[in-house]
Image (cartoon, rainbow, N blue to C red):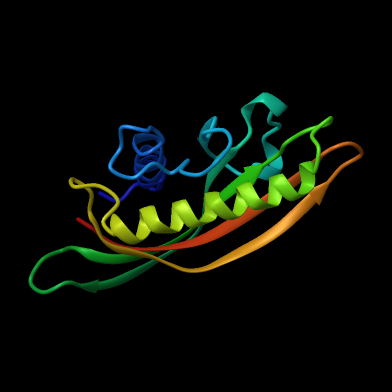
Length: 162
């Protein structure tokens, strides 16, 4: 049975698993600090302390179900859109903090894109047929004394339900 919480957890676990120097591909490669936090939920609504940047948020956005049957089974095709949002912040007192923040965010988006391209099923045991990242958007959020650089990878996942 399809479950959006389980699918979101699969994406989170893939990133967590590859957030180490002993991984086959380190998603923190070339970054000043490794990813400090990977969480499920919307980055706009989750206050994150400065010490937990860079962070990655797995944000489910949309689910479409095709109720036609796959072959002679009762399985249904499901398309899910998720945003995988990377946020970097190198806080007050950093020389060239904004430039560093942006550059680190570009590394982060590159590393996440590479990870999803090489693990299109997200997990060996999942019901995911394939996943792709067709686009990445970049943005910044400035508050009074902080500057966050943001990358938003649109992750399209094609899976089935029993």
